[in-house]
Image 1 (cartoon, rainbow over the protein chains, first blue to last red):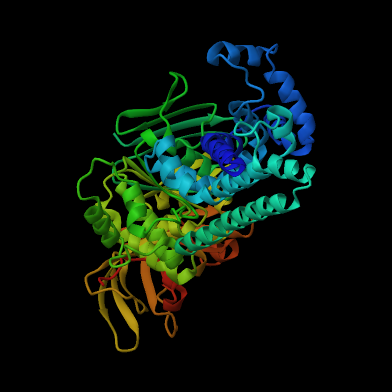
Image 2: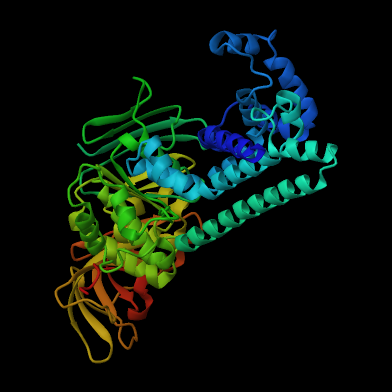
Length: 219
Length: 365
C-alpha cells in the first residue's frame, strides 16, 4: 500500500514535471533575458535547502490560514496539507531542480546552428521543437524524469513535514520504512527497503539500456 | 524583382552596406573574417536583426525596420547552406531534404531523391550525416536548401570545411547546378579564387562597407578593392573552349586571345571553361620571344598601367576581346617603354595555372 502510494506520487510528479521541464529547460537554455541567473539560482534552491526546512515553509504556505491554502480550501472543500494532493504539489516544487537542470543541459547540447537551420527550413518554433530539438535533447529530458521519479520514491523529510504519515493518504514507502524501524519491525523494514532498491535498480538499468540503444541508432 | 538589401548597424560589427542581386545571378560577398559578410547573409535569412535594415526579395518585403516589418526566418523563403552544413544528425539525407519542404507537397520522398540526384548523391538517400563525407554532407545541405524552393539562395562559406580536391569537385558541382538556379544566389567567401571562379559579380567588403561591387574586371580596376584583397590575389578571368587533348598530357584550348595549352583538364572537347590567370604569373615582352619554354604567348596591347604603392605596377592588357592583368615592376614598365596602346606579348607558363583555378562544370558521371 505504501509502495503503491509512493509509485503514484512519483508518477504524478513526473507527469506534471515533464512538460514543465521541457518548456522551462528550453527557456533557460535558449532565452536571453535579465535575471536569468537569479531564476536559475531559484530553481536550484530546493537542492541546497534541507528538506525539513523546505517542508516547514511549504507547510506554512499550504496551511489553512495562508492565501494558497485558503484558495485551495475554497476550491476543493478540504485543506492542502496532510493530503495526497498536498504531497504532489510539494513534490513537484521540490523536484524542480532535478527536472529542469538536466533538461536545460539537454537543450543546450543542441547547436544554435541546427535551430537556425530548422528555422530557415521553414519550421515554426513548435515544429522545430518537435522535429529537431526534442529528438536531440531527449537524453537530458529522460535523465530529468528518471531523477525525478527515483528522488520522489525516496523523499522523506518533506513528505513527513507536509503530509505526515496517514496510511493510504500520505504514508509513502520511505515513511513506512521509518515507521517499521521505530516499531522494531526490522524484517518488515528490510522487505520494503529491498523492494525500493530493486525498483530503483530496474529504473536506472532500463533507462541506461534504452538510451544506449537509441544512442547507437543515432550515431 | 531580385534581391535588394540595405543594412546599417552600429555593432557588434559596424555595417553600412547596400546591394542588389538579380534573379539567376550569383554574387559573391568577399572579405576577410570579421568584415561583416556573414552578418549581411544572416540579415537576409532573418537570423540577425540590425538596427536599421531593408530586405526585399522578389517584390516581397522581408524586413523593413522603418515600417516595422520583420518576417521570422521560418516565414522567409531563403535556402541557406551553413558553413558547418548544420544537417540534422538524427535524420537520413532524404529526411534532411524533406524537412525543408512544405508539408502539403505530394511525393516528398520522390522530390527529395530528385534533388539528391541533382547534386550528385543518388543512392545515398538513406545515409545519416555521420555516414557521409564532408563533401557529401555539403551536397545534402545544398539539396536541403533547394528543397525549400527558395526565393533567394544563401551560401555561407560552403567550401571552407573540405580539402582542396573535394573543394574543386564541389565548385564544379555548383557550376553544373547554375542552370537550375533561377533565384538570386549570394555566396559569402574569403577566397578570391572561389569568388572569381563561381560568381557573376562580386562585392568586396571591408569593415562592414562595400568597397566595390562589380565584375572581376571592374573590381580588379579598383585600387581600393585591390588594397583590401591584397596584391597576390590580382587575377583576370579568361574564357576558353576545350579543343582537344594531346598525347603528352596537355589540353589544347581556344580563347579570344588565341590558342593556349594547359595541363590536362578533365572536360570533353567543346566544353566552355574559365581560367583564372594570376597577374603575378604573366610575363610581358615587347617582341615575340624566341627560344622560350613557356607554351602560351598571347599578342595584345597595353590598355592601362596602374602603378602600385610599392615597386610594382598592374598592366591591363587587351588580348583579343579579353583583358589580362600583369603585375610587373615599375622598372620593367620603364625598360620596355610600356604605355597605353603599345603592342606587347603576354607569356603564360602552362604549368602556372593551378588545377583549382579552372572553372568547369562537373564532368558527366
